[in-house]
Amino acid sequence: MEGQNLLVERRYANGRAELLRPFAEELVRLKVELIVTASTAATLAAKSAVVTRWGRNSFYRVVDMAGEEALDYLHAMLTVATHTDDATEGLTAFAEKRPPQWTHR
Image (cartoon, rainbow, N blue to C red; front, side):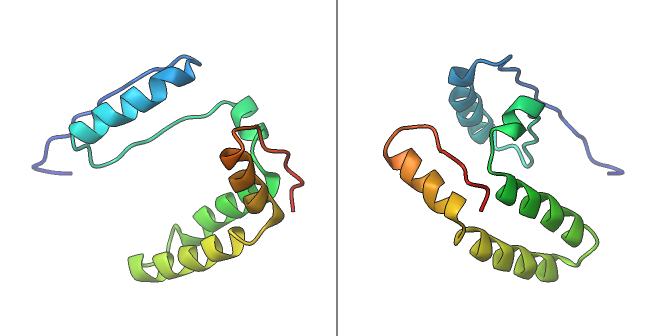
């Protein structure tokens, strides 16, 4: 980014989930242009395998696409993902304030 400055803001929750919301609110107030997060293997393992796989595959599929083409593809994949059993379970679990029980379908 020649001729531009780059400022990196870092926040570390160190496994303390209660810090995530305040961090996100602060970054929104700072009007950052990009937020990058990292997850542990345990965090990823607790997610729906089918949605995680589709997300990973979609990321690699669009990485070389033009912007509009990538958005069209991702929109279609998001539509498909919302019709999975795991999407229904995730929304139900959220509404019932309980952990989801993934079927990976």
